[in-house]
Image (cartoon, rainbow, N blue to C red; front, side, top):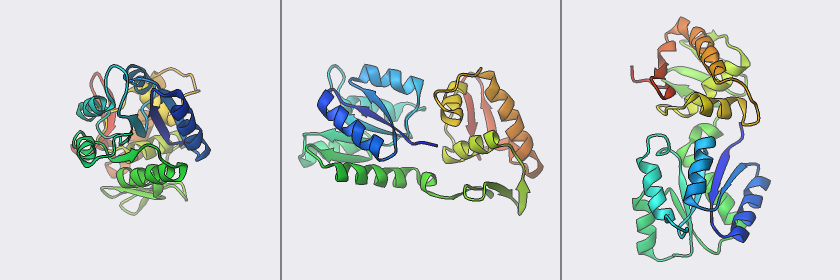
Length: 229
């Protein structure tokens, strides 16, 4: 599953350079030239990381970062601030609003790639791990197996991908549309109710070992994977 990075930068030349760089590195790129455009992009497809310019027209990047970290849907998304402001006070301000890292312009392509990898590894370790374990439920990407209490659980490929996504984003709520985008892919056009069918199948696959309780319906919002019963 491709990692999505949202680049929010009003200077077209910088935005194009960064987007080309991270695309070449194998990431999927979303672009926005302003906070308003970023909101639309996030509503359409939730990113795994946000590269956010400090100086943006209208609403500043620092204010938008504060908003993102207060929102239940986006507060877990790591943010790397991009800015020409390099003094210690400004860096502290960035970290205080919830930024995970800070790159001062101008920066090299190699530095940017290294910072992205480091932040993803630190904030979403499951993306780099072959085995994910949540409360005794183990998903092995290399062997495509799901184990619980020493027993193998049988499930289809879509349920496996859905479980992998849920286990990589524990406690986060996702709408049907977001699950379609993240599990099936943004270019697949199917009815959102298809998600409900696969949720039922996933729960049935997890039921023998009592993990079906972890796939929870959040009324009016969607679904989440949670160990809090």
